[in-house]
Image (cartoon, rainbow, N blue to C red; front, side, top):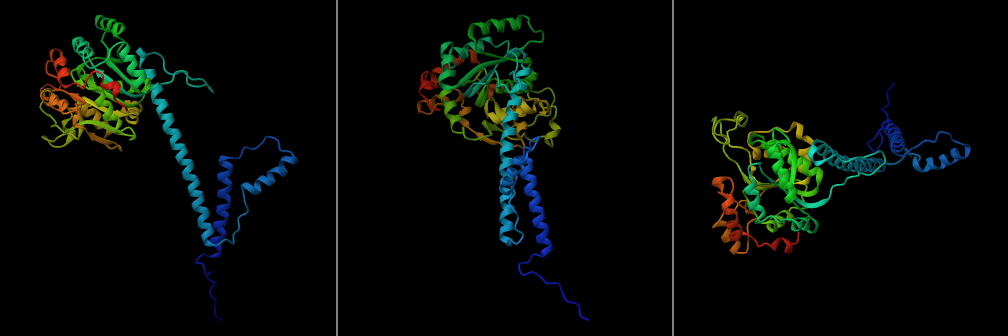
Amino acid sequence: MGLTRPHKPTNGFSPRWVFLFCIASFFLGIFVVDRFWAVPDPVQTDEDASLDKVQSKTSHPIVNCEKKEGSFQADILSQVSQTHDVIMTLDKTISSLEVQLAAARASKADNDEGSPMVTEPGAKILKERPKVFFVMGIITAFSSRKRRDSIRETWMPQGEELRKLEVEKGIIIRFVIGHSATPGGVLDRAVDAEEAQHKDFLRLNHVEGYHELSSKTQIYFSTAVAKWDADFFIKVDDDVHINLGMVGSTLARHRSKPRVYIGCMKSGPVLAQSGVKYHEPEYWKFGEEGNKYFRHATGQIYAISKDLATYISVNRPILHKYANEDVSLGSWFIGLDVEHIDDRSLCCGTPLDCEWKAQAGNPCAASFDWSCSGICKSVERMEEVHQRCGEGDEAIWHTSF
């Protein structure tokens, strides 16, 4: 007696596969709807039960297992699309919460800047960050009073002009400094008196020291991102000349980009010899002796976008600090989806270089001397550089961003 072969469906799917697929789709639909939308009442009346039946027909339509292959595929694609939309919404929500968390953490760590944002269940944030264009932090030291005054007398607005710059242009400029090893001592009191006079400091919960610049940079960005909701955060040394209008125009070109790192990119040698300036104790991490660092912005001035400043704030406890601050910052972005922008207008030389460019109608955004890692004898020469290379004191007010 011969054996007959089972019937093979013409559409390529066995009846068993179609039956299992229908059952899986049915329960998947129930799970998705019940998981996200269903809110059962504690007590259900007969009238409610009748209403539930009507709603059930709408929420859980009867699956027709006789649908053709194309219909099943369309249903699956629809479910995938809806799930993707939910995931994207959750991702945006998580990103927003991370920014708020970073701001709260940095505020809490910054004892000198006051209490962190206070929240209560169901209440709005009581202290909101002002929305601004960019924050420029001028890294300074206790011994640099004359450097600060040279900047105040040239390119940095003072008094009401500084407040006006914040209100009308969304530009925040502050000298950034921590405290001495003996808080409340003569050095701290001197800065307190200077702050009372000029009101242009951002005080950090940080002990000042030359070998602590990487840590100071971390704390600066964390503190600034907690205090202001800025598109960009800039770090600049206190012996560099700045044309604020040109800096604003430079940043405005990259305003729509989420993660940008702007500066004069370089790749200097890793110095293994002990005792020399810029010695790198962890030179062995960079390969064979004589190798160079990865590309990073030179430390005199650079800018990062809000997302990167937030990243530093959130991950500050685990970000490694190398001997040189600019190398440390560059290392924090290696492996991230960050756009490095090499803008040479941020590292012009002092006259004649920046003077020629200013006369040609293309002033530099920042000027300094490479040989001195800043303007050589900046206290004596800042006024000269400003007169010969400046964009004009009114340029910032006539520049649109």
